[in-house]
Image (cartoon, helix red, strand yellow):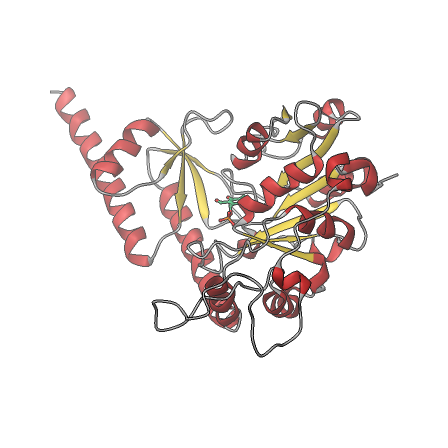
Length: 360
Ligand SMILES: Cc1ncc(COP(=O)(O)O)c(C=O)c1O
């Protein structure tokens, strides 16, 4: 049986969280002299001299309309990366507990574990980039606190089979975190609707991808109120700045624009996939549900360096197990994609020329 009290660290259970000025007085007042702010103002046109809402209720209420998840089931972090770190700090005892990751996958699950001195157990994805359920089952023990599942997965781009994720949710008594950073580009349904079915489910999303707000840093975590309350105890008091809260609220009004961008990116992803598939240096374009493509190339390092020389940076994943020879290529603007395809065309042209001269 899943019991959140068995998962949370003892010191966090006993923790008296920091009580900020805005926690202690929540009403409206004429004069605020309780937070050691600078009452004279800010050296800007707009003032930011007051601390922001520690729990970002206005943003959560707006997000609640979009995601149809109640605000009290949300946590907002300084990017998903803060959410990842806080999950470790709240649930994983350093030097004792472990988590399971399914590589190749997003790197921060492992880095954050290492920072927090938490053991990482690896159940690599199968050749078709799906979960190896038997291996996950074999690795899990009484000290396994979190299983990290990234779907659509970075860097492979595919969505993981829904039934496999459900199998993990049904059979594991720790937290199952489904990282849906790329869900807006996917044909798969989000797991948000399943939150009420699974007390151990945590869904992570971010405004850094489809919403085009990577520079603002806003990650979202959705879970039971019990889990969210624990994370709220551990978080830094004012983790999302006033400016970010205001700008995000404005952005959240523009869902139509975001949906248009998503459609354009997905269309361009299909177009790029077709072009790559016709290139003689391309061995495989992996099916993608994200805003990038993993492309297996002949001489990937060489191609990577050629593109760099042309001023085009892609991500070289060619040394990553199961991604051998792979370059991870983000879908760009129409012009950027054309520049990339042209550069690859020149690279191929140069190869043909070399071959022709080789043959005398
Ligand atoms: C799968 C996945 N999760 C989380 C993140 C981090 O997102 P954020 O910008 O919200 O910290 C990334 C960034 O690339 C990612 O690929």
